[in-house]
Length: 171
Image (cartoon, rainbow, N blue to C red; front, side):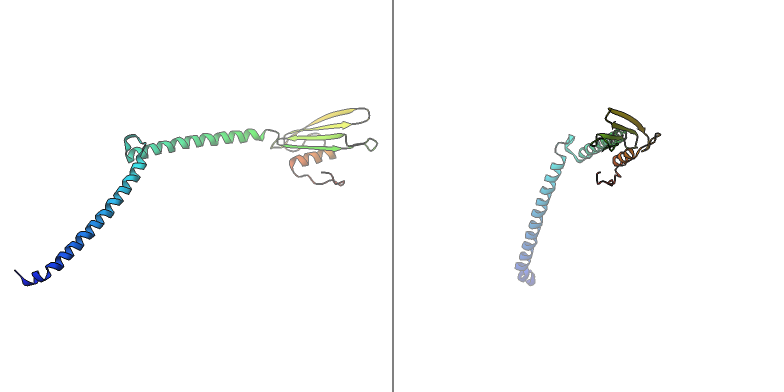
């Protein structure tokens, strides 16, 4: 044969062995990667009808559609509750006062009750030595068709949230 082949044959055999070992390493690495991907795929498709990716995606889309319908219903309910809540009494204030200097204590009071829009009533209890009288005035839009006295105006301002301290320091 050719003399150079006899001289190179051990090197060629070593090179072939190195290529075979490298191919074996690549094959083992690819096999491990494939096992990892297979395990992930099995975990993804577990519990799905048919056990394939199409079934998983279809089931996921059904879940998303159902969640969107439920979210829309919840939003509608929240909006209805918010609308209804605006008509409930939300602003309340009580102001005790002494209308007459010759009677003792702050036995009289004004009670302001209003909803979100300022609709409601002012209840004024006027205490005198002869008895107690109770008056009510309707509210519409934070005002009344009836004239409001100073105490009623202050109670209404407190109920609205814009109360300021009076000259005697009481709020």
